Every structure is written in C-alpha cells, then in structure tokens.
Length: 211
Image (cartoon, rainbow, N blue to C red):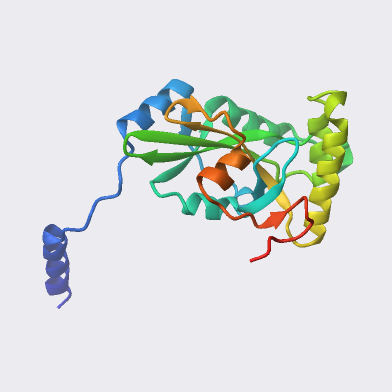
C-alpha cells in the first residue's frame, strides 16, 4: 500500500502545473553584486517593530516592518552589505556585559529589495531595536551638530509619548532607491503620497489618526 501511494505522489508531482518559486531577476542580481549585498535573515525584534520614515522630524509612526515587507506587490528579500554583516558579528563578540559599562547603540542598515519587472526598489532601513528612544536620539544628535538640537528634543518627546500610548518605534526607513535612482522626497512623503499608506500614529497630534 505504501509503495502504491509513493508512486502516486511521484506521478502527481511530475504532472502538477505548480509554479516554481520566483527567481531573482537579472537587474536585482546585478545590483546585489554591484553593492556587495547578500541575503540576510532580519532579526525578529526588528521585523516586529513599528517604524518611522524620517530621521530628524518624523510626523508619523507606521506599522511593523514585517507588515510593510509583506505588503509589497513584488517578491521582497532582505539584504545586507557584507561590511555591515561583519560589523554586527564583531560587535556581538566584543560587546561588554552589563558590568562592563554602557555602549553606543549598534546602528546598522538592512535593505528590503522589491524585485518588480523592469524596476528594482531598495528600501533602506535602520535597525534601532537595541536602544531606547532616548538613547537612540541622543546618539544620533551628535552627528547633526547643534542645529538640530531642538528638532531632536521634540522628536524624542513625541516618540516617547507614542511609546507610552502603545506605539513604540524601533526601526527607521532611512531612504529609498528606486530603479537605481535615489528618491529625492522624504521616505515619509513617498509612503503617504505615492504609496497612499495610512500611518499607525500621528506624532504631531499625539494620537492614532481618525478613521
């Protein structure tokens, strides 16, 4: 009996018109090689995090990174630069324990590749799940000098309020490269205007958008 069913399964598989998994396109492979990118398993803490799409003055909190990736209309794959992968590995080995004092947040980028016919889009995210909002904003402020102190203070206050309201943020969409060209408008504007995405939380209003 078992031999009969085994033979039947083999026969069905041989005639089944089931589609094969989508292969990575040639343009996508070319971009990967050009930028030194490789497939990467994104951390769960990053994938389940809500994200903002403006580095200095975010107006909205969007949903989870995982939901955003799942909503892409074309095959989507997480990628990382080889140098970033090495830096993450080194940080994991050399990061001191709690008794060794505090360290700067480990900032690294992950690229969500959307491979559509005729166009490959890279959504470049930053994983900030290893730091609180206050730690992250204080760390980032130093790279933008005093001219953004007021902006960062306001952003920190708004993000902390969002967290207290049940909308914590641990990821950031830093920029978007579409078809080999960097999107000039802010990622936040691209998502709300071009993609018609509805934010999860309005930072300026301090509440979820009215439905």
